[in-house]
Structures are given as C-alpha cells and as structure tokens.
Amino acid sequence: MPIPDKQQWKIIAERFETLWNLPNCIGALDGKHVRIEKFPNTGSTNYNYKSFHSVVLMACCDADGLFTMIEVGYAGRNSDGGIFRASAMKHWITHAGFDIPPPSPLKYDEKKCPFPYYLAADEAFPLSSYLMRPYAKKTLDNMKRIFNYRLSRARKTIECTFGMAAEKWAILNGPIRGHDPKKVNDFIKAACILHNYVRKTEGLEYTPIHIDDHEIVANENYVIPPTAPTVQNTISININSSANVLRNYLANYFINPRAALPWQWKYCC
View 1 (tube, rainbow, N blue to C red):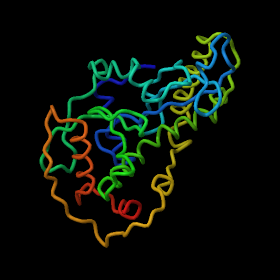
View 2 (spheres, one colour):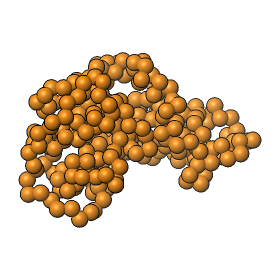
View 3 (cartoon, rainbow, N blue to C red):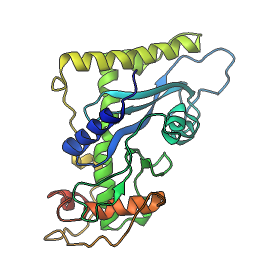
View 4 (spheres, rainbow, N blue to C red):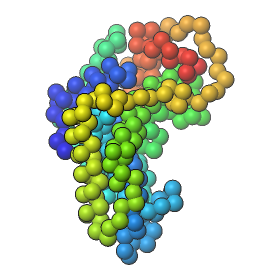
C-alpha cells in the first residue's frame, strides 16, 4: 500500500476539513481485533479483553474511507496505544519518514500560527503533536466538549472504514482458521488492499460514509447557549509547543465564531 506523498497528505487534510470539519487532519487512526483460531503453542498471547483470540489490524484512513496505512500481526492482548507506540507507523511519523507537510495555519486563525498536521484517534492513544485525542470526560467544560465532538466526528471515519471492509470481506469478521501467523496476516492485508481497490472502482459515492452525530455525544443535560459566545484565543503556539498546548489551541479555534459549526452547541452544551 503506497504511502501518500506531501501533496497527497495535503489533499487528505483538505478532504477532512471539507467533509468532517476537522482542519489539518491527515487521517483517522484505530485498531481492529480480527478474530482468529488460536495459534498452536501461543497460550493466551492473542487472547484479548473481548474474550477471544485475535490479531490486531492497526490502520489509518482518509476522509473518504480508504486505508492509507496499515500494520497487521500484533497479538490481541496488547492495547491499541501500546501497539501504536511500538509500531513502524509511529516510527516513520516521528522520524519524518512519511513526508508529512510542515505545520500550516488553520483556515480561520487570525494569528496565522503554523499548526502541525495530525492524526485523529480515541482515548486509547497517546496525545502528541502529531496525534490528537479527546479530553478526559472528568475534565470537560463546554470548550472541551466541543473539541471532543469535532475530533470524534472525524475519527469515526476509521470505524466506518473497518465496517465497510468487513461487510465486503467477511474474513475480517473471522474467525480466520490457519496455523501460520504470516498467512493470516497476509489475508488481512489482502482484504484491506481489495477494499481500497473496490471502493475506488465502484466510486466513493457507492457506499458513502454516514456518521450519526447523536452517537458521538451522550445525551446529557447541558444548557444550550442561545448564541455561540465570542472567544478571543489568547493561547500562542510555536514549533516547540507541547501537545497539551496544541490541543488547547485547537479547542479554542473550534469556538471561534468563524470556525464554529452552527450545530455544534446543540450537541455539546
């Protein structure tokens, strides 16, 4: 599976902003446990928290539901975050091996501060300058709820991509029967490649991605403000800014009147 070049990463980021209103995002990241028949002499190595044996497909997709990066073969007992930390994917991202574009200002940011391109992921993954994850639920105020909503809305594209692939290629639902781990991994890789091929040849509109906003935000009793508040972003960022500062900057950006979505307050406040 060819890795996007710098220009292709920019196109992916533009699509995420156009379709899912998340700027500078170059992919949605998650892991999928693919059910397998227990490999011989492996004990509980592949036994996961869902109570079955699996290998993990770690994957990243674009805004249209195409896989852009995959890694296969990690034992099911490992966490998504632990797998990502040990992955070649993380190594290449952090060592400039993927030709990711340099930081670029967010579209409606009056300060025009360069903001890094990043992956969208869930709470299982470590926050970093190249990976945005939601705020912890116990710390939420309205700004953080809106950030979580905006991030999760785009992140769910990887869940949809896994779902579309498994619907066409049932091997991803398992259990895969085979005693050779390499062959099992090859079957999973082949399904991902075939998914991309069929999705491109059938057209992206053949199976459009649908994300229900009601599934993203729990129905909690918050007061909806009559109008979106005007907020001045007082945070400054630079190339050395920490991941927390970058996330706070992006969260502030989402409640900027020009960058806010008309409906985001309905779901989050």
